[in-house]
Image 1: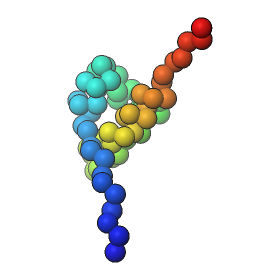
Image 2: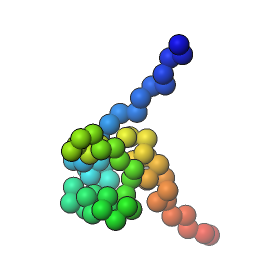
Image 3: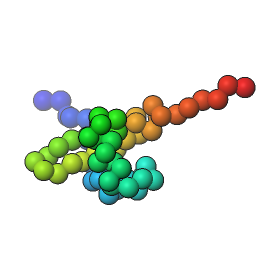
Image 4: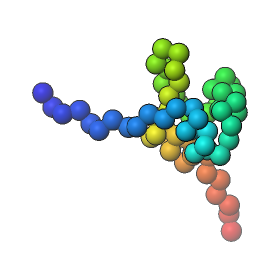
Length: 66
């Protein structure tokens, strides 16, 4: 049996909102509109994988041309 890869940490909505400098309500609206970072639903709990939040931030980078 091969060892599984190291799991990415799970963040709750409060931690994710703080990282993205937004509110939990705004994060909830992003989920509702399918515009925010990918998330995991564990029963009623919503969790965000750290890697998915990092990907969301990277995808939002706007490069200016000069």
